[in-house]
Image: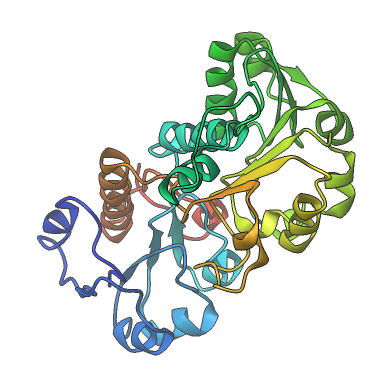
Length: 325
C-alpha cells in the first residue's frame, strides 16, 4: 500500500512484483482509510504525516516492511514494529544537499528580511529609498552555530565556508572528521547558543530532543541572533520561540517545520514580521523528491524479496530475521 503518489515512475517497478494499492488523490489519507487499505498488505510506503503505530500494523495481519518516504521516522513506532518482526526503512542521504540548501535559504532570507521586504513592496508601501529601509544583518564573517553534526549539519557547515564564517557545533557525538575537513569547532550547547549569530537546528526528533530548544536556550542567544529549524517542529518549543521573537529577545527565525503541521491559521507566529515561514519544503526539489520515491520503493522491494534494504532503521531485527546481502 502506498499512501500518496510519489514523484517519478518508481511504482512501475514495484507493480512488476506486487499488487499496488495507491491513494490516487492528491491529499493525505484519513486514519480510517489507511486502516482499511492496509489490510492483507505485505508492505507499506508511508509519508511523514502518517501515524504508523501498533494498531495500524496489526490491521494488516501480514505486514513485513514499512518504508517511510522521509529521512525522519518519528511518525513510526519503531519499537512496536521490531516486536512484530516488521522492517522499518527510510530515505537518508538523497535529501542531504537539498535540505542544506533550504537551511541556507532561510538564513539568507531571514537575515536580509526578504519575505518582509517583498510584502512591503507588493502592498504598495514602498515610496522612496532611505538609509534605514529594510535593513537586515550581514552573514559574511559571522559565527554559525549548528545543533547536530550529522549529514545535513555537515552540508550546512560546508556551505558556511563560502561566507568565511566561524562554525561552532554541538552534538552528543563529536564529528572529528568534519572538524578536520571543514575547520569547525566542537563546543557545548551553551557556548554554541551564546556565541553564534545564526543557529541552525539539525537534530532528529525523539523523546530526548522534544523542545530541545526552549525558553532557557533561547535566553542564551544574542538579541541579534537568528534561529533556523529544518529538522522537526517539536524540537523547538514554538510558544517559547514566539515569545522570544515577539519580545525581540532574538532578532528572527526561519522555520520549515512546526509543532503541528499544516500550521494552524491561529498560530501566533503568522502575525510576526521577524520570522520566515515555509511549508516543510526542505527536500522539495524535483530531483530529490524523485530520488526519495525511488529509494522508498527500493527499500520495500528489497525487503519483500528477502534482501537487505539500502536504508534499514531497526537493524536489531536482523538478529531474529536475517536477510541476504
